[in-house]
Length: 213
Image (cartoon, rainbow, N blue to C red):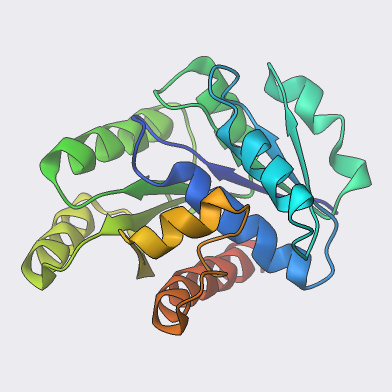
């Protein structure tokens, strides 16, 4: 049975596509047949990223395809072990359709209120539309050096009742440069950066196992 992961956000610039790529590469490395569904037709950043990955012959290989609607994307599910939806920014009808189809949702956010408040607003909108709360998971993304900000963000999210994933996605030049080459945030040239990303990925994998069991 195909596993479906939705990575969605209320706003751009919070690491949504970075997380979608990380998840896809993690499972592809485990010899799963994986496809990223790129729903951002105006930008198509994951599609362009995968073109660079193929040009640089980076393994593991995975597929990326752009789709206008979720229904057409789901027609591909029998051909893959995992579909990762890289949703377009902003809460739209397609965001809800992704949420309804997905086994698990990842909502990335930075630590500022400019990021946190729209993220929680999106989570609340999904709940109002009968998406189970255990399906909604918050990932702390593009994190800088302030441990105080990080802890305050964790407390803020915890107070709303949503699950905060262990681990963080750092705001690092190394990650940006790796993605410029078609690599994931777990495939940079710096072991310490990769290890931080690995913790978050493992938390997502563990959460998927918990939800599906």
